Amino acid sequence: MRRAGLGEGGPPGNYVASGHSLYEEENEHLQEGLRAKVNALKHISVDIGNEIKYQNKMLGEMDSDFDSTGGLLGATIGRLKLISRGSQTKVYCYMLLFALFVFIVLYWVIKLR
Image (cartoon, rainbow, N blue to C red; front, side):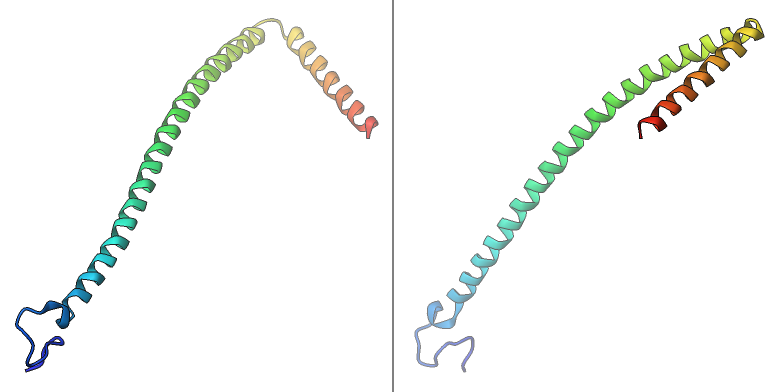
């Protein structure tokens, strides 16, 4: 009977002649490829972890920046409420001065073109 490349008259257990070493070589080659892919995945996962740490740090910094900006806006709104409680003539005067400032800046920008 001929099976897996065994000759009929060959000695039993002769794996070289049977092609067993070819299968071992192919398995080793596939193991090398698999090992390379696993290493690539490991490096990618480490890079993802580093990126996540960096993004978390950046989000923490943004959170503190937004908190400080919220405090600044709260103080500004408080001042605006204080101004609005005052006499109405001051509010109209401030609005008129602001509108005048905006028109002067727009005129200056248009004139420079």
